[in-house]
Structures are given as structure tokens and as C-alpha cells.
Length: 163
Image 1 (tube, rainbow, N blue to C red):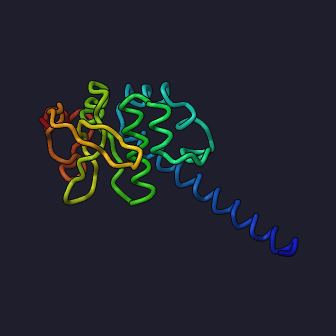
Image 2 (image 1 turned 180 degrees about the horizontal axis):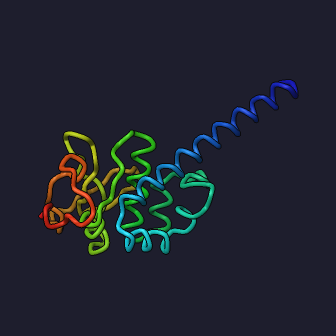
């Protein structure tokens, strides 16, 4: 491969990485805008490398599942990262209103994994993330048993409507 072709490939790769970073940063902004301020603060405090670094959530190229299993972040951070990843890779809805986020704050075993049949949003369930990326669901009940917040149109401060 000649030098000119190599420079063109490097420039294309740089543009692709910049575009990916912009998409990730935009998605982070969208997700954080749907969250209550206290939950945003918890996520930012627990995960500065994911939400404050300009490189975005895929900066180190470690697969997300491997990173989550290695770092074992709090359930709210884990949920935010999983929702972001599914939005970026599968186009799933991106929201985390206060009454859904509270499930993750109150239950360390909560994971987003119960997909809405209509829109694909992953609501909380109690389970364990496996190295394959699958979720092994536990039979125990969670606090959140309401409808999908995307389909129902619920926003922050409407938690009682989802009960």
C-alpha cells in the first residue's frame, strides 16, 4: 500500500471515529436530559470516565459487557451505559425517568432487560449480566412494575402514575 492510500485510509478512520464520538456524546446528552438532577449527579460521580471524558463511552474499545463485568459499577450507572449502548447499536429508545432510575438506585441487581413489545425500551428486571451479554433473570419482584415509560409518555415526577 502506498503512502497516499495509507493517509487516505487514516483520514477516513479518523472521520469515522469522530462521527462515532459525536453520536455517543449526543446520546449521552439525550439520556442525561431525561434524568432527574439527583440521578445525573449519581451517574456523573460514579462514572467520570464514561460521562465526562470527551472520548465517549467507547473510548477504550473494551467491549461494554466485559467492562461492566470488570468494573461492576452501581446499578444506575450500569443501566445508563446499557441503555446508551442499545440506543447506539440497535436504535432503542433512550430515556431514564426518575421513577425508573429509582429501581436501579434501590436494587443493586436491577438491570435493563425487559424489552417493551411495542418500542423495545428495556425496563428493569432483577438478574445477572453474563459474559455473553445475556441476562439471567431472577424470579424476585422489582419495585417497578409499571408500563413502558416511552409508550406511556411518562416523564420525571410522574412515578406515582407508573405504580
